[in-house]
Amino acid sequence: MTVFFSQLINGLSLGSIYALIALGYSMVYGIILLLNFAHGDVIMVGAYMSWFVMNQLGLGPVTAVCATIFTCTLLGVVIEKIAYTPLRSAPRISLLITAIGVSFFLEYTAELVMGSGAKVIPSYYDNKTFYLGKVPLGLTSIITLAVTVLSMLVLTFLVQKTKLGKAMRAVSEDMDAARLMGINVNSTISFTFAVGSALAGIGSVLYCCSYPQATPTMGSMLGLKAFVAAVLGGIGSIPGAMVGGIVIGLCECFVSAIGLSAWKDAVTFAILIIVLLFKPTGFLGRKVQEKV
Image (cartoon, rainbow, N blue to C red; front, side, top):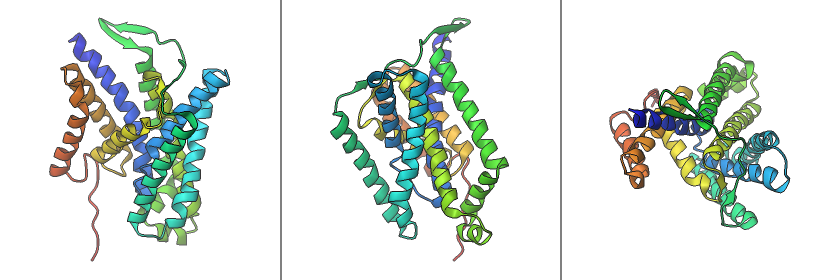
């Protein structure tokens, strides 16, 4: 039972990171129906920023965390303005190809500038271990779970109770009608990218707490699994992204615990295929009716 509860905590911690990143996919898709495959590479840029601030500039972890979140937020907005805004009226496949192109651009630019080797990120804090009975509970897991829950509460309040949140929901329902009602659609979309990228920055810091190294391709699989989590929970659904991330994290940890760590990625995608076969909209997704 001790091993079970240890893996349960590890799964919740890893799943929380996937959930934060998946929220970026869901928010952007819910607004403009774009699968932003460059989202994972925003996390990679954030990891390099943490390394640069602490290792090269010699500044503290608080400065590194703030710089990482700010850099990811700014990068998300810049990508939206430069790459996606000019193609907003283009066919959806054009946006998808552009997103993949931006992803490759960020990866190879990072490899050109930083090199292909891994950069070891200094520790943000001393990772102490507490015990809940006989179950070890690391400080990293506690911080990850607490930050994720707090981020979800703040995001839910933002979307449900604020004026900008109402504008986001209006644009997601009908962009043209929202424009006619006086909502600044461009600002709303940019704000959505900023929030999603800020969550990616938080996820980048939490991921680096558990896996303290940065590589040019680290965002590829991380972003892909977060995308799987978003689809699993129901793409466009904020609670669905949370549920999907937790499910993926738990599956990976329990599969690794039984000695099949080499198969954990395969199991993740197999679960996605099975769920989509029986429930194409995901766990919490809603059916969309199209009028002919």
